[in-house]
Image (cartoon, rainbow, N blue to C red; front, side, top):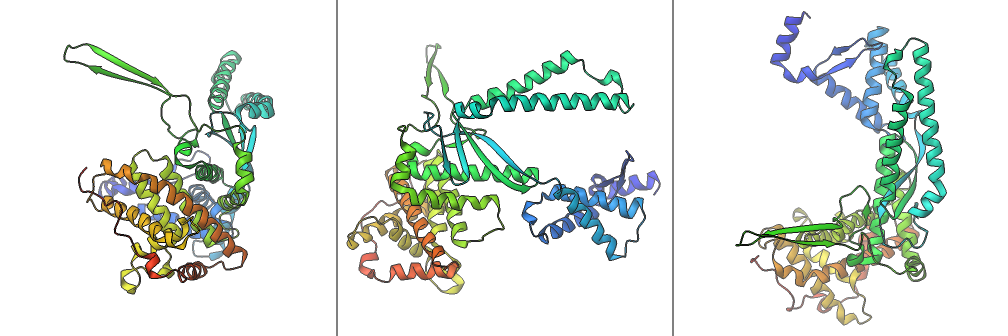
Length: 478
């Protein structure tokens, strides 16, 4: 349409002004409507869902590939729009063009774990943690050599393009300037990795570059959450990926008194991470090898989401994520809410029939009853009533905080946080054993887990499960 007509259209339909198809050979853009752009997005999502490994596909990358193929077939080659075979060829070319670039990648992610670099390496499932010293001993020279080679290849490629007339010689930086930039970039990389005591190594199966990094970070994050489970709240709260914000190791505080004089306080931490004996990993292997192996196997699911589906495993991984968030949460109120979310994920299923419309059980009763069974460590059955009361105390606090009856800054909450730390951690270990047992028996459906919970509850009389009149009650004061 003529420019004035197009401008009037955009003025009346401003959303259409941001959509276009890129034309080949620097041919600019071909305007399309906002709804046409949405149609490409819907087509992209459907095509990805229909792929055997659709989870490996980056939707933005596939959308761009579909648009490129569409331009070639229907605009450049002028193929008929109403023939299905050309639509199929457009989609097939797009998926082929992006998946041929997929490759296995090994990622190296700096982490905060323990102060001391001991042992020199250890593993949590597919994640291998190396000390900084071992990392640079094993890979330092190779990293430098590969970096130099890639810079040399880029320089040779640029020189070849200048010789062919594709680029102008005056656009090329001098060798001295290029070398300075390369040294600065390498120093940036080297300095960043040397800030951390630990480097996590994780290999991700072939998928898009973006998704490969996401899966690497998710899996390493889960491995750190497993470590939080073994170390507990006090020691494990600092565990994190290097690029996630942590507490500063140096702080200062200024005050000014009535006399107008500034005064200061300074503090410096001993470092980030946990304080642990040199044999901490050997101790975990000696006393809890089954849990270490089971948890490590579970987090492997993040590397290939569509393979070996296990509802029990996925339920535990969801709870692990909440638990890891809770351990590192600095605000006790938010920490308790996340702990209770962990317990709910472990214990509540659709089959539990806790929805109001089903006329079934109250969710509070289900969560507290099953939490008591999972966190009950005594051999005396009579102690389960106290475990139920402790769980109910946490749930009351959670409800009081979520529904505004208690201030998130109330000091009284601190009196029950020891229960939250202990109960949730014990429930996580017990649930892991329960879920693994069901999977090994071939009872892999949610209904099997519900049946197992009902079976565990049956021998316990109502008198043992009833709540005590004692316990901490949330206050509305804060």
